[in-house]
Amino acid sequence: MEVKNRTLYVLEIMENGEHHSFDYETENEAYHAFEFLVKTYKDNRILDKGPVITADDITQLSICKTPSDSEPTCAIANYSPFEWFKDIPEEIMLSAKIYHENLK
Image 1 (cartoon, one colour):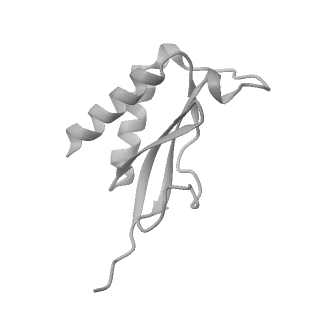
Image 2 (cartoon, rainbow, N blue to C red):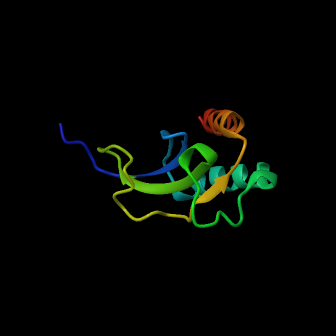
């Protein structure tokens, strides 16, 4: 049986050295999830992250395109710019999970 390779759009949340991924079938779905989180946590956005910020200080949010038969390594170019947030790792993870589950 042949497995058809397709591209997934992966919403990635990186915090404290950990990566959490949420797969979306379409570019539009991933973009809306990204946009929802950015708008929801806009008061926690880091607009000027400066030259040095450690992974322990921030939560990073991005969308990557990746083949469905591999780990989400962003081997294909990033779809969107990164957004950085402070002080919300648990909240943003819970919101991303609920948003993703509601699309199923």
